Image (cartoon, rainbow, N blue to C red; front, side):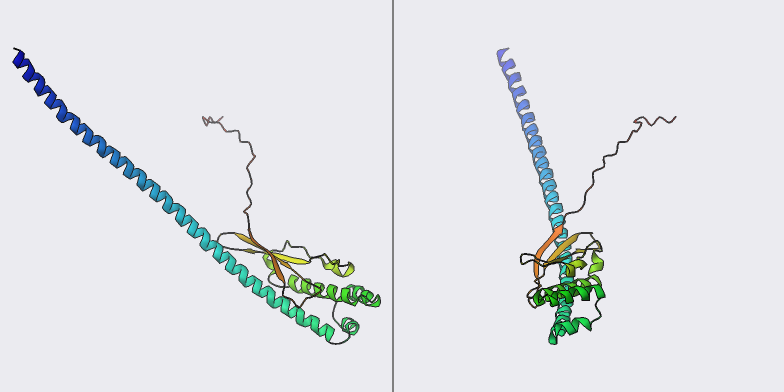
Length: 222
């Protein structure tokens, strides 16, 4: 009887061992499948981030390219103003101003400086006025018509520590991204090329919606 019981227990043990190995194999397969899915999801997420970064970089380079073209237009405008200024200074400055097509108020302000023996100050004011006026009438100004210009420069004193500047915004039509360019003007040594003071992308405007909506969650119509 004892021998018979031992054989039965042995058979049961053998069967349980076979079942445990099958369970172990299934668990290993489930773990492999789980880790595989997680690895695939992580790779896909990294791919999306890489594509987004590539698109951001491509759009930024396009924006910078447009800003470079605009700055080249500004350089040509600046050269034209320098040539016009040289024309004023090629002869007598007072005669050049009197015979120019400048507005009478501008002429009177500049001639007042000349009468006060402030020729250097007059030259700075004249150059800045010509630059602002030509810039205002250029296609660059149309990029950002909200820019305000100090046309009263001819009625003000220019201090030594002042740094007149012109700023404009280049906009990428495809993405709406904006790049701000600020240019420092050296009115005293105007033949020196202007220096770029600021060249950076502007953050996009974001507005929070503070509105309060009273909605019926059950959509009960009365």
